[in-house]
Amino acid sequence: MTNEPKLIPKISYKGVFIFLIILFAGVYLIPILLNFLGLPKSVSYFLAAGISSSIAFILILTKIDAKKGDEVYFKKRIIISIIVGFTTSALMTFVYGGDVID
Image (cartoon, rainbow, N blue to C red; front, side, top):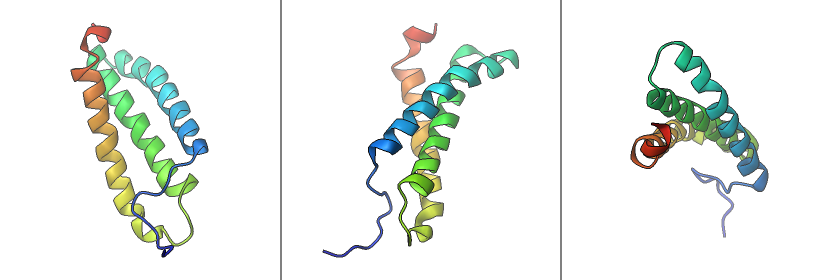
């Protein structure tokens, strides 16, 4: 079996732990700032979850679980991280979390 780099690497337990820490901290702290700016509660939670999950995915896929030689995939991994982060944030906030926010 070849040992060539993949677009999405195997995620370690350390990566999952750091992702959860960043996500919880972001969802806890960022909405406070966004509510202070006058945004509605649902929009501030959507942006907070999207921003924090995107940052966590980018950090994990490009720094923590990336291997030497994976640099060619960094731009694609960043784009995938942003798309997945905001898509799951929209699902969590507007589809499944509407009764919790209101």
